[in-house]
Length: 99
Image 1 (cartoon, rainbow, N blue to C red):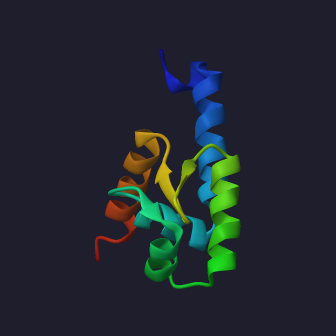
Image 2: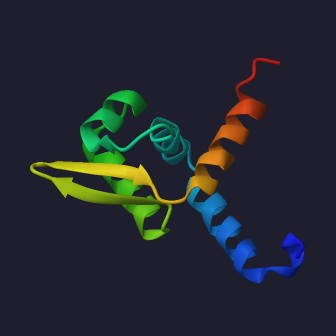
């Protein structure tokens, strides 16, 4: 079945792209591309304040892009769907290839 015929897939793609359409949220997803990370490590990699990163993580969580869990006093985050990771990898290949 083609993508144009699958409204559910169109909705998922649209919601994912809307959620990712902010520089900090895209950076967060790039940081999470390889593994689950604690929020403080995401803050270090992305380079913004913890409160700002936490707000953007919450947006991504509400949009079902990432999930988080508590481990002691740390909050760990990871990308929920591997399709999102493929999308981020494709965007990096296109926009970050240096050509």
